[in-house]
Image 1: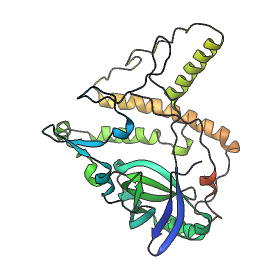
Image 2: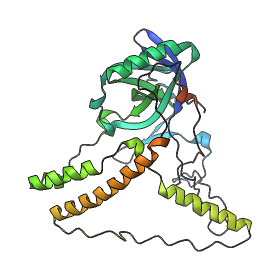
Image 3: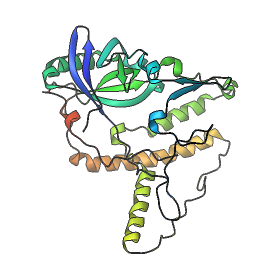
Length: 311
């Protein structure tokens, strides 16, 4: 696994040499724009809309369009003069209770792994943070852009999660939510029972990306057909949008009773499956155990990497 950043964690007067590794991968296939007739790649050209000429990459600059439509061009010297942040330092600003960190601020996650010479200080900080119930708010500069981030402990490794700045969060101001709505105590009780019946531990949930799996199957079928010299098969037709969905009856109590009954049957089946699998379930490590280092972060568990689909 390649690191995307190398520097130090600055915690008071303590400096911990560390590296950042991307914590997540996209598993869906990378799709490209191609010519439908012959499969040739479609290349995007950089064309100036004023003179119609293709522009070499070295002549491409950044610009900001004002409200009046004027383009302000910024050159490399302008950008180089901007504050560069902490450079190769992850500076701990403050600690804050984990429950106070709004999930809407979250962006991308990274594993923050120590260098060998910083392991002891890393483990000390990791154990202290895990026991505190807090997260560290830090500043980190990635790709020349200073970001706010949170550092928390997960599976004996620090996870650094970049955050949007608080002033970048749009207010949740929607007229429809200002209407007065009457909810009965009976409806609220049944809704609570439905939530309880549908509640499971996250680790026990079987969550898969069905779209990505189906897309990989389509690609495999097309590849096999091409190897056999066959033409493209007719793709399976997706069901129309909304197919199989029941129309709402308008009676919330009746819908809650129906949903609760179905959830009870599903929960009973889930419990039977869990009992059958209980003997095969691997044992987990005790939480908060001090080890020689974050071995989980050193294993490369990445599968096939994929780019974001164009468009």
